[in-house]
Image (cartoon, rainbow, N blue to C red; front, side):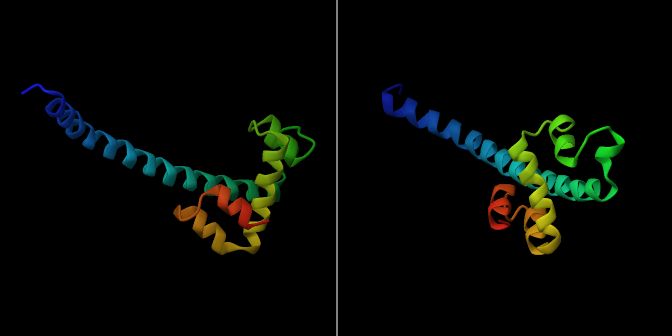
Length: 111
């Protein structure tokens, strides 16, 4: 029967797998983003230690983040601050690496 109820029920049943798939993809992306954020923080700590900015002609690590990696001044400062803070707070680093907490939460907690 093609009354409004039957058509609406069919649409809902067709949508159910689609939303679950999209939801699952988004959760996967969240976990991958957290892992990438962690990897970047570790790389930034290494970059500071080896003074990578000098090798590419930047005046500072902040300038390197802005010019080479495309961060704005505030984001560059925050990334470097968090990288330094995680040396003293390895539990937060593990929470970021595992996806337990997103970078934004780690940034706020590390203040």
